[in-house]
Length: 123
Image: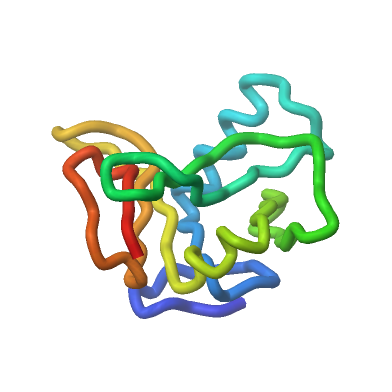
């Protein structure tokens, strides 16, 4: 078990992407509520597009590919393709509830430019 500088306890076999306990709890709730099969993993990625050149993507996926990095976060299987893996190292995925909205938020120290929508990035 590792701890990051925010004292969030982590239990993952990969230390490069932090997923907060609140985000894991919400993702597992969504998976259960939508009756997504146990063997499916959460695919986290960076795709071309968005106002700043790239956009984050999240979605459950039943397929794995030979170039995928596969990790376990407290029972949540996470899939990251090779290209996205490079961009996500050092990032944090959190789930926030607030006056300005509710949802998943990425904090990525590798990003040089972001836009107002919060889902587009440029490295």
